[in-house]
Amino acid sequence: MHTYWSKLARNLVPYVPGEQPQDKKYIKLNTNENPYPPSPKVIEAIKAAANDYLKLYPDPQGQELRAEIAEYYGLAQNKVFVGNGSDEILAFAFMAFFDPGRPILFPDITYSFYPVYAGLCNLDYETLRLNQDFSLPVKQFCRQNGGIIFPNPNAPTGKAITLKEIEEILSNNRENVVIIDEAYIDFGAESAVKLINQYPNLLVVQTLSKSRSLAGLRVGWALGEDNLIKALDTVKNSINSYTLDRLALAGAQQAIKDEEYFQKVRKKIITTREKTSRELLKLGFTVIPSQANFVFVSHPAVPAEHIFQRLKEQGVLVRYFKQPRIDNFLRVSIGTDQDMETFLQVIEAIVRQG
Ligand SMILES: *Cc1c(COP(=O)(O)O)cnc(C)c1O
Image (cartoon, rainbow, N blue to C red; front, side, top):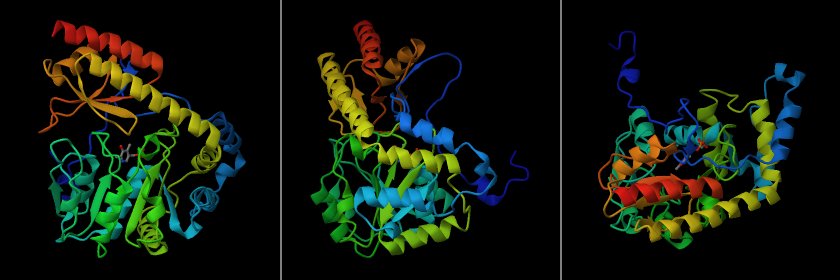
């Protein structure tokens, strides 16, 4: 069956992305995309970049974009790495900072790409059990390990830890790299970026995919000490020097520049999330308080898998993970107010029927 496959390929267990079905038009609340379009300035910049210069390779260092991000965070440019989505940066980071035989730590319920990267790099890992309320077991991260990674806020729970708790983990792990995946940071948690100058082992990874409505452009960045950025550059330049194309570089720069648009969209999603959470509580759902652009919910009487199927039949896609501890939960991305009204009407009918 795997004729011609390398041993490496045969042993891979790949990530399964959320569905992007083409059969009909769904209300897509399953992959945490932003329901609003990107800033019009981003579209203009991409159109303007579609010119004759496409015959030339892009800047392999992405200097202008890095300068923009560095200025935004008040960091030196050599503390910024840019990549083709944060997924790519995470893959580079697993190769750059972790070694086989020294188990890395991440939560049992978290972004399911982490075990995939570990498998690809032949790394050992231990998962730490989230507390009963799905909070991160901070103290348990303060022990011998080969590195740490977790999202803050965590996915798919939407729960975040405080900067003080992050510091507790960092100060107890000075020998290893600690990666904080801040894909959802703009929806309510506090970024660890301000700790970078104090902790040379901290790498913060962010993306344009969620809060800046650019999942389709594939741009993310990592922030950390010069030395960590150099390691990422070394791995990148051993795989592909031109991970970001000219259109992506041009669009990403404008996305960072258009702060006003970003703030407007980000706040809108937070407002819709809070409203949706209140409505779901009224319908009897357990709603984990979220600091992300999705809510993680469970109904005491109607099984999540049943709700998932019924929603899908009626054109509403959410995410269901058939996984221990969370197999009675649904992750629902926050859409527009209109999307969420429709979602609430449909889900209300489903739980009424039982
Ligand atoms: C969406 C997501 C990413 C990936 O983001 P891209 O920049 O689109 O690759 C990374 N980590 C977590 C936890 C995510 O949910």
